[in-house]
Amino acid sequence: MDQPGTVRPALLGLLKSAHGQYLCGPALARQLGLSRTAVWKQIQKLTAAGYRIEAHPRKGYRLLGGPDRILPSELSEILTTEWLGRPYHHLLSTESTNSDAIRLAQQGAAHGTLVLAEQQTAGRGRLDRRWEAPAGRALTFSLVLRPALPPSSAPQITLVAALALVHCIRDHYRIPARIKWPNDILIATRKAAGILTEMQAENDRIRFLVLGIGINCNQSRDDLQGSFRYPATSIAIESGAAIDRCAFLAALLATLETHFERLEQFGFAGLLDQLQEVSEVLGAQVVVQIGEKTITGKVEGMTAEGALKILTVSGSHEIIWAGDITRLTHPSR
Ligand code: BT5
Image (cartoon, rainbow, N blue to C red; front, top):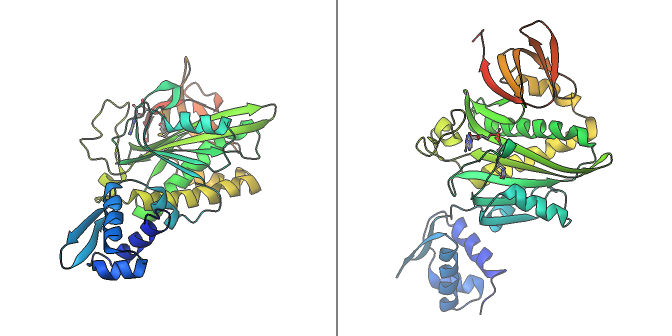
C-alpha cells in the first residue's frame, strides 16, 4: 500500500516528535495502520528524499537529520504567511530563479508565488553580472509580486525588501546588517546578500514584478573567495554557526509580507526613518556610477520616494534614482 500524500508526512511527524530517539517498527506500523514492510518502504523513500534515518534491527528507526534542501513539506510546516511564498516551486537546479519566476508570471502566476532553487547555473545580478552560490548552502529565490502600486515605486519595493532582510538578520542572529543603497546587504562592509528586481509594466500599472534575492547563508570563507567585485561574507561566518536555511526563509517571508502590506497601505514615507537607521551610505563619502556618469560627494539622505540625495564635491545637489556605489568611506568612523 502506498499513500505518499498522507503516510510519509505522518511518519516524518512521528520521527521528528521523537527528537532523535528510536521508535520501534511494530509501534510505527500500528500507529500508521501499515504493515512493517510498508513502513520500511516509506523509510526508504524518506531516505531517498535526503532524510538521514538510522535503522536498528531491534530498536527501530530514528531521525538523525533532515535533507539540506528546503522541501515544500518542510517549509509549509513552519510558514506563517497569508499569501507570500504560496504557491512554492522548489527546484534542485535551474539557470536563474528570476527567469523562472518571470516565465511563471507571464503565464499568470499568483501574487506571492515563490520559486527557490538549491543551485543556479546562471544566477544573475544587475547589468547582467553573475550571482554565484554553491548548491545547498545559500538561499536563492524569486517572488512574483503584483502590487497595486505604480511602476515608479519599483525601486521602493527593492528598498523595502532590503529593510525586511536587514531586520530579519538583526532579529534572528543579532548581526548588525546594513543596506548599501539600493540593493546590497552588508555585514561590516562585506556583502552578504543582493536583490535583483525585474518588472513588466503597462500604462500606469505594474503587470508583475519579480523580486530575486540571493543570501549567503552557510558559505565558508573558502566558498566566498571568488572574484567578487567587493569582499563577501555569510551569515554563518558572522554568527559563528551554521544556520537553518528553511527557518530563516520562513521568518524572512513573514517579515517581507508585513513590510509589503505596510508599503501598500501607508506608503513608502512611513518606512523612511527605519531605512535611514540601517543605511550604510548615510553620511558617507561615495563615488556613484550611473551608466557613463560618475558622481563624487557626500550622501545627505534619502528623498521621501527613496532616491539618494548627494552633495557633490563641486557643491551641487544631485538626486539619484539608480546607480552603483563603487567607493564608500565614512570619514567619521
Ligand atoms: C545583486 O546584483 O546583488 C543582485 C543579486 C540577485 C541574485 C538573486 S539569486 C535569486 C535570483 N535569481 C537570479 O538569477 N538572481 C536573483 P549586483 O549588485 O549587480 O551584484 C552582483 C555582483 O555581486 C557580481 O558582479 C559579483 O561581483 C558579486 N557577487 C556574486 N555572487 C556573490 C555572492 N554570493 N556574494 C557576494 N557577492 C557576490
